[in-house]
Image 1 (cartoon, rainbow, N blue to C red):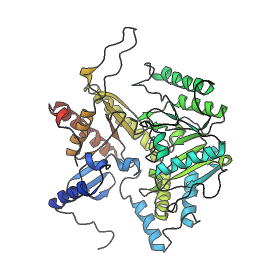
Image 2: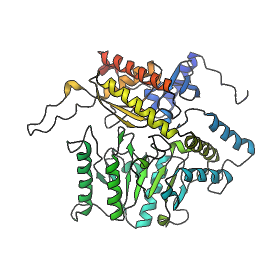
Image 3: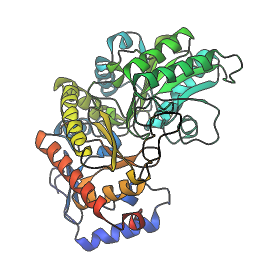
Image 4: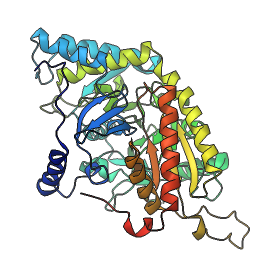
Length: 464
C-alpha cells in the first residue's frame, strides 16, 4: 500500500476489542484514554476519524502540540524529504543540515533582542526534560539552589518539574501567588489583585526572615494551561521581569504550550514585551513529533559538557517537521489569525455564559480558551466584612458531563484547572471560520444537554 493511501478502517468490533485490550494492558496512569474512549485511525487538520467510523473535531490538538492540525501537507512533505534523502535519523547532538535549518528558523521567530544573544540546548524529547534543563542551567550559572514558582503552575511530570508545579506536596520551592480575576487569592481581582500579588512577591524576596532560600530562578507560564487557562496580566509580567532583574534572578518563561502562535503572538511573552533569560520550548516546535529545547542568554552558558545530555536529542524528523511548522506559522501570520479568531470565539462563549449560570467564567488568549463551570446553587454568601461574594464553587461533575456530551456530538475537548472544572479548547491555528462556529455550536449543545441531565452527578465518571 502506498504511504499516501488511507489505512483501512477497522470494523466496529475491532474498535471495542482494541479499547478492551488497552484497558487490560496499559497502566492505571493512563489519562486521556479514560475520558476519550476512541481509536483514531485517520486524521487531517481538525478532524479525527475513529475505527468505528465516527468523525470528531479535535480541540485537544495533542495538548497544544498540533499547531497546524493533524497531518498538514507541509509537515508530511518535510518528513518525507528527510526520509527520501537518506539522512541519518539518529545523530545524538551532532550538527546536521536539518538541525541547522531548524535552529535558524527558530531563532528567526524569537524576539530579536533575545535571539541576538542566545544559545540553544537540545533536550530529551519532552517538555518536562527541557524544564529540568532550565533548572540545571540557572543553578549552575548562579550557584544558588532555590526556585520561585507560582500557584496553579504546571511544568511537567519529572521530579523537578513536578516539584515546581501547583499540585506538589513535598516541595523545596517557594510558591508565589499567580493573579486571577475570577478566583483572586486576595478577593479583589483585576489590576488591583495583580498589583497585590506582585507586591507580595517583592516583599517576600526582600524579607530577611521570609524563609526564602536564595533563588536560582523564577519560572512562569505566560498563560497557565493545565492550571485552568489563566492568562498572566501583561503589567504583572513586566513587574515580575523588573523584580527578577533588580535581584539578579534569571526569569524562565515556560512556553511549552503557549508558543508558536497559540495565544495570538508567536511567543506569549511578546504580549507583555518582556525578554526572559530562558525560554522552555516543546510541543508545537516539533511539528507533531517529539522535540524540546531551551533557549537562553549567552551569559548563562556556564555549565560543563554533558551537564544535560540525552540519547534522543537529535530527532531529525521532528526538527524537519518543526522547521516547516515554524515557517508556515510565520509566513502565513497564523498568530494574528489566532488572535482574531480566538477573540471571536471568546465573544460567542461569553454570550453563551449570559444564558447558562453553570458557566462561571470564560477566559483565554488567542486559541487557548477555557470555560470554568460552577455550581451556582452552592454559591457562598458575601462575608459580613462587606467583601464581594466569592465565586461559586467549581463543578467538576458538570465539566466531565460536558466533555462526555461533547464527545457524543463529535467534539474532543480537554478538562483542566484546580478541580478539573475548566473545559479547555486548543484547536489548531488552521481553524476556519466555519469550523470555529461548529465547535462553539457543539459545545453549547453539549452544555445544554449536560445541564439538563438529572443523573450527571452520579453517573459521570471516567471510562476505561
